Image 1 (cartoon, rainbow, N blue to C red):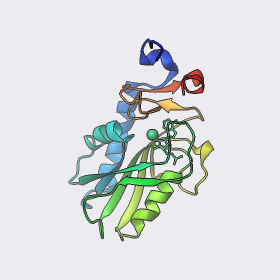
Image 2: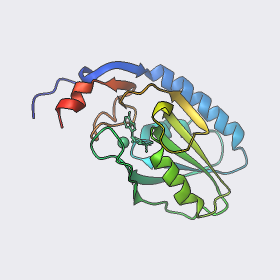
Image 3: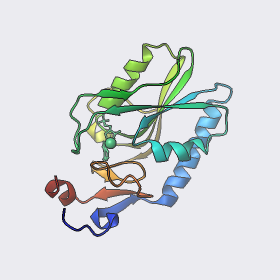
Length: 187
Ligand code: IMP
Ligand code: MG
C-alpha cells in the first residue's frame, strides 16, 4: 500500500464542524425529550455508522429509555447502494407494544431504512420513528422520510463522525467530503 499522509488530506473540505454537530444534536435531543416523555422508547441504532451520533444524541436526551442495536449491510466497499439489504445482527429483546426510534447516520437511497422499517413493523411495536443525522434527499429511491433530521446534505460522498469509506474515516470528529480521487483510484 502506498504511504498515506493523514485522514484530513483525503478530504476536499469539512462539511459540518464539531461545533455545528454538537449544537444541532443538542436541539434534536431536546425535541426527542419533549416528544417521548413518559413513553419509555427504545432507541435502535443501526451499526456501525450510528455509533458516535447515537452516543452523543442519547446523552442529550433526558428521559427514561433503553437502547438496542442492529447491524445491516447494504453497501460493499463502494460508494453506491447495491440495493440488497442483509441483517447481520438483530435486536436482543422483544419490541411488541414499544415505541421505537431508529437512529441512522445517513438516509441516502432510503433502501436500508425502508427495508428495516418493514422488517420491524411485523413485530407490532406501538410506533416507529426515524432519526437520521444526515439526509441526502436528492438520492432517494425508496418512499421514505425521516421524522428527525440533523442536516440535509448535498449529493457528495461524506465521511467522519461514524460514517465510513471502506470502513475507514469513522473516527474523524467532524463530517467531511471525501476527495473523489480517493475512491476512484484506490479500490
Ligand atoms: P441507503 O440504503 O442508500 O439509504 O444507504 C444507507 C447507508 O449507506 C448508510 O447507513 C451509510 O452506511 C451508507 N452511505 C450512504 N451515503 C453515504 C455517504 O455519503 N458516506 C458514507 N456512507 C454512506
Ligand atoms: Mg456504511
